[in-house]
Length: 448
Ligand SMILES: [Zn+2]
Image (cartoon, rainbow, N blue to C red; front, side, top):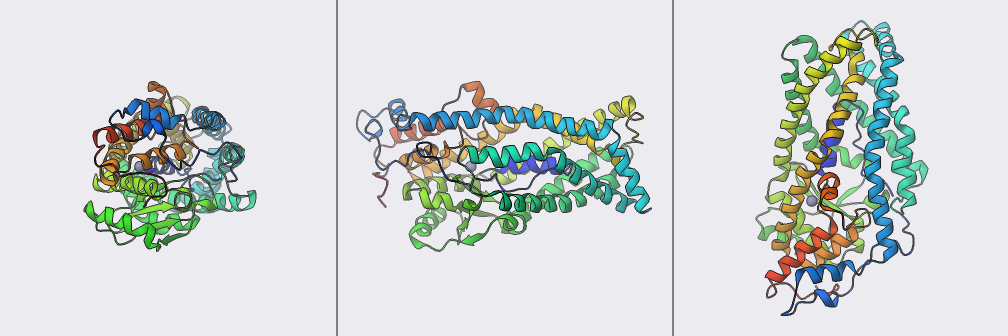
């Protein structure tokens, strides 16, 4: 599941330039670069008295054609640089808004339009969101459109992609507008304790967005339907009930509208919590693979990962606001006059806040990734025990290798991976299999 991406997005959205956009787009796999669909367990990974987890892991990895591996490595390693370029680009955009005094100009314009403070804030937020969207558009279009197509991951032509971009701009305007008006209201009224109240408001905002996202935000970009093929749903619902999950439905999302990536997730909480499989997984995954993935998603559910994440990000948000209080004061003392910003209650301060937020997220990347990756590992182990499909899980790890490098170094995985690497996941599955040779299901990809 990708709750980290969503929550990080929410952190950025708090400064109203985030993206609640669907996971990036993309399609037509080039021949020889798609990860293989394995129709029978490789001989080195077959259950036998001599079964060895390391040998079995290598046997699975050996099934990946060299071109597919090269492409996957290049795609994922390019992503490391993109973290840096995104940071540099956004920082440059914010410095332009500050140093050319465009931010002060946008505030002045809002003040000329109305004398009503909250409305001035809203007008400024709209100007700012549009300015940031335009200034960062070249990188967005490269990263989310051209690069995804280049790696055969995107399915959209430019027109529909652009429509999705406009939709996410509107979502950002609405959510960013609401949060921004409340936050600036708090800052203006509570000169000393604004950072604590601001953190509180932001946490409530994150909780509300997580709650409404599956029902109100996701359908803006994709069609979510109840899955009604009993051949698929019955084993899943059986597995769910056996794990104490009162599920009546499984949902399907038409992710193939944007991408060829296979995925599934648990989203929302309380009454909106649901397990969703994407149509790429349903189309390309074997029954064993789908059950292994569902076991993983159920792990997120049973282990309360959404609540844990909310708690974790609540702590991160409080730390963020403490840092804001210190860094905004210090920066304004030094450059406030140059940038024509009157104080922290002045909306023109927003580019500075976003710049500070970008630095915070950039530095925190390994911490945020490690938090998420740890949960994903827990869900992996839960899923293996629940589904008893180690070979199905190994297949899933290989399919996911289309967009995630399979065999990173230890430090590389610690810094950049928000999920365990494919090699790691296959090894976990094979260790599980080694310890459960008597219970592992006989596997050949078409077996029920
Ligand atoms: Zn997950």
